[in-house]
Image 1 (cartoon, rainbow, N blue to C red):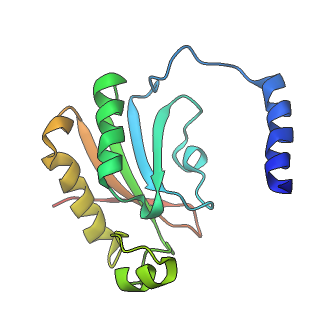
Image 2 (cartoon, rainbow, N blue to C red; image 1 turned 60 degrees about the vertical axis):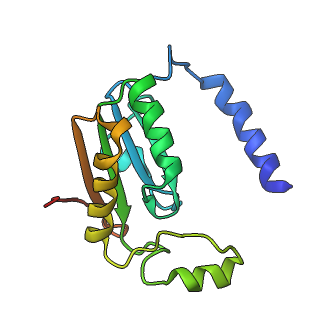
Length: 158
């Protein structure tokens, strides 16, 4: 448990400098869906500060049923009006098959592998737009983060 102990020790230092927020509503009214990859610093990459956005992370930054659940709460209960789906280069879900990931993990589930970032993003953006209870978003956009340079490219949806 040495890693857990380090987390708890770090938390004690955090408590001394912690400044709370009034509520859970993001100041910039943005929800960002992105990958759980530890190399991604969402706030730094997009010029955000703590409290600016809801950040929803999962493997691949894919729009799953659970992401839709989080977006429903983010928009209807907490006031977000824009959503960004941000995938990244050199993702662990790119260039592998669902069958390979089932074999590695022993889990017979859909992993939402990425054959092509543009197509995966277009599919995910359309899924958000086609979900009736998410009709409140003014903007729905896709980004691909270059994990090596930090540059973000917008995926234009056609």
